[in-house]
Image (cartoon, rainbow, N blue to C red):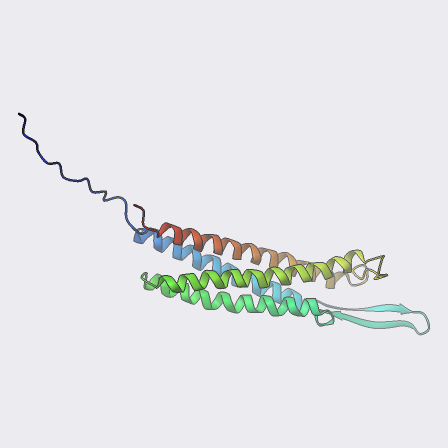
Length: 196
């Protein structure tokens, strides 16, 4: 009879239970870059909206021409927009610092990463709500609403409307960055799940 030899089990050295350190470092650097871009986009949107101000002479029949100034504080939706994007900017600074600390200490807790993803989702909801309200008001400013007899104002306050539109466009970029951050964080967590 032939002798039976035992065969040692095969070890899979190339199948780690977590992401390799180089990949984790690259993921953390990508997260830092996205968060810095979020700060820049939020700050740009806030500055554009806050500096949108225009004074025009408006014909007022009994009196004649009346000087009228349009600014972002005249519309509650624009005030909410500034508050929401300011919050997103502050949030991006805090989470950027947390991401940088994760670069220096790669073993940061999983619960912190989970909290950051959850707060990213909350921040996306806040920014998306601000974007929607500001865009709705801007649309009425551009087109007017014949059913409610709201006249358009962007034919008079063109500079004001252009700056508000620029802020809305930049805030949509900020919302897109938040979506990318959420997807990036979820994918990073997925890669850390042990594979059997």
